Structures are given as C-alpha cells and as structure tokens.
Image 1 (cartoon, rainbow over the protein chains, first blue to last red):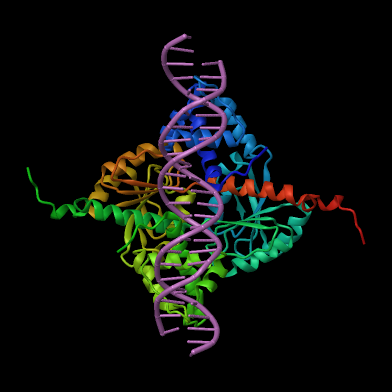
Image 2 (cartoon, each protein chain N blue to C red):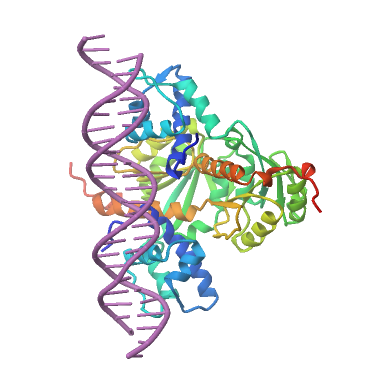
Length: 225
Length: 225
DNA sequence: TAGATTGTTAATCGATTAACAATC
DNA sequence: TAGATTGTTAATCGATTAACAATC
C-alpha cells in the first residue's frame, strides 16, 4: 500500500499535521485542499496528491476530515510506535536536543546520553544521566536501540559512527556537520546548518540586488518629506 | 554572471567546501570531479555542473585546484562579508546556536540575543547579554541588522516575526516549527526537525521491512553455531 | 601523441502543475 | 439538479544522468 513516497512529499506531511492541529483546535471539522495549500503556500493539486499517496481520501464538496486526517498521518508516519534513540555528544547542541519536547510528539524518545568528557559524564541532562561513550555499544545491543543522534565534533564523527553501526545502530541522525560514509543496511540522515545558511545567504544577497534601496543605512537616507 | 542556481546545488556547495578543506589539510593540490563525487556519493557530472554554475573552471587531465576552488566557493557564497544577525529566544536551542562556532565560518555573526523572560534578560550567553525583546526593533534599525534567527516557542513566532519585519529585518531563519507568513521583500527559511525526523522514520521503517531479521531482539535469536 | 579529465549538449527521470472527469 | 471539491490523467518544468566532444 505505501507507494514509494518522495522525500519532498514526506517533508510536507508534518507541515500538514501542524496546520491540521491548529484547525482542530479551532474546532474545524473539515478542510479543503485549497485551504491547506493556502496556509502552506503550496499548490492545491500537490496537497491532494500528497494526501492521496498516504491513502487518505476526502469527500467531494466537503474536503478532508481534520481529525481523521491528523490521525491517519500520525499512523502513516509511524509516530505512534515510539522509537528509542541514543544521543551521542552532550555538548550544547546535544543538550538542546535532549531537552526538546517535540521529539516525543514525533515518535522519538531519547533513552540515554553519552559523552567522552569526564566532566560531562555523570551529569543529569533532561532527566537522564550522561554515560561514558564506551558503554554505548553494549547498551545499544541489550536495549535493542536502533537510532543514534550524533552531536559530536566533526573530527570524531566517523569513528563514533563506525562504533555505533558495529553495535547494530541502523539509523544515524548526523548533526556533526561531517559527511559520513556508512555501510548498508545502516542509513544516515545529515542535518547541516551550513547548507541552510548557504541558501539563506544566497537568497538574501539576491534580495539585496533586487531591492537596493532597502539596504541604505538609515543615517544616510535622505528625508524626502 | 551568477546564473540562477538551484536550491539543491546551493546546498551542495558547503559540502564541497568541507571535502576541499580536508583535501587542503592533506596537502592535495588538485582534485577531480570523480573524487569529489565519490566522497559525497554524488554523480561526477553533477559535481562538474555545480562547480561550473559558480563560474569556476578546472583543468582537463588535472582536475580542480583545491585551494583556489575553496576560495572561489567562499566568495561565491558570500562568506567573506560577514552578516550580522539577531537571535530571538534565548532558550536551550537559542543558547546552543548562539554558542555555535560554525556560523562565523559561514559568514554569520550573532550580535545580540533577545528574550521576554525576566530571568533570562541580563544573563550573559556566548559572551553577549540577553536583552528584552522590545528593544529589538529599535536596535535592528540603528545597527542596520537584516537577519534574525528565530528560536521562540511556536505560539509567539508569527507575532515576533511581524515585529521584526516591521523593523526592517529581511531574512528570518525560523527554528520555531511554526509555519510563518511574511510579506515581501522579507524571506523566511524554515528549519524543521519534524520534517527531517519524518524522513528518517520512514526510511528506517522501510529498512526494517527489507531486513526483518536485523530486528529480532538479541535474546530471541537462535544460536545457529 | 594518447589518454585522462573537463565542459556541455542531449536524454532521462521525477516532481510539480494544469486540466478535467468523477462524485456527492 | 447545479456546483463545489476531490481524484487522476496529461503536460510542464526542472534537476539529474548519460554521452561525447574539447582540451591539455
């Protein structure tokens, strides 16, 4: 049933969920693809196609049931069977992620934190004790944990990744910024702020070319009143 | 000269830069498109096309000059003219980002932090004092700051965004998870962990279907020796 | 020169958008 | 019924990959 869904579509599903949650709070029972499209600045056909691929159907002349669609997408994305994850690297970013309440909502529970820094080991972060990294492989095996969130410095990212994959970790969410090479069947998903920042910088630069007047510092602007 | 470059290409440029930095440290003078492609698991034609669009040319039979290409990409992405940014919302994620050294390398300097929480105001984070949010608009104008990083709770994200855009902020890097609507010419770039997590979950689920034996808990596995 | 590698044009693939028939 | 909205097929668009000529 789950036809091959593209990454792009997959990324839009949580967006639909957010809008649907809002609509649900507003006590709206139905929503049209046009309304969803408007709120997310998408084409309405794209919305219908995305929802169709998840196997949900709307009602002609009425639209899509807000609550049913929300539940359906939750199920489709597998958010109800919570997956357990290790967080490796208890630095600032690691701590921020460990503390982030949104993960639970999206089916991910961080069950343990690891670090190599003696000062960090033993600390309690987000209610969990930071453990020494060398314990991670054995614990991954015994707890049957399959996901690791990697918030380690780029220099040691590949080494840590190898260690974890060896211990049966199958999905690495890589925040280190270091491109990793991983053997099948393990998968890596890279989260790279440098990528996004490049896009943002470039778009801003183009905007500055197109609207040059906007960028005259205030002090230099001539008062034309 | 800067032909319309796609978002996808733009996202790959910092990746090339990372590999090039490594090669530079390894004292490699030249690199072929095939080698870059191998390291990033891309098609080599794609690499050549990406580099061509930035206006850099290689040498047939030799490849691309590692250091020259690195400098060229830095220039193309505008990383040398540092842009100043405000960070709004000094929670965990905000603190982690304020502290993140990678931004400077990519041309972004956080010059001020803002929050509405009286407990946070006055604190020093990453060497900068947290200021009350109401001061942000006037400061944005007087310092001519054009970029804001939004790490506020989703409920207040739209209101804060409106406030900032009104004050002349032109680029919002939105970590709030709340989809924002912004008037031209301001731009928003959303950073959404829920999106990435959806993709990761789905890929993992598919992997589990394809390699079911991998997911038998250890205790249940039959010893076949 | 021969051969490796670039740069570029053409072919393919996939995702988005347009058009429209089906439905209630 | 008429009309609004879905679901789906066809057309378009853009990005990736393949093929190959140009270069040193």
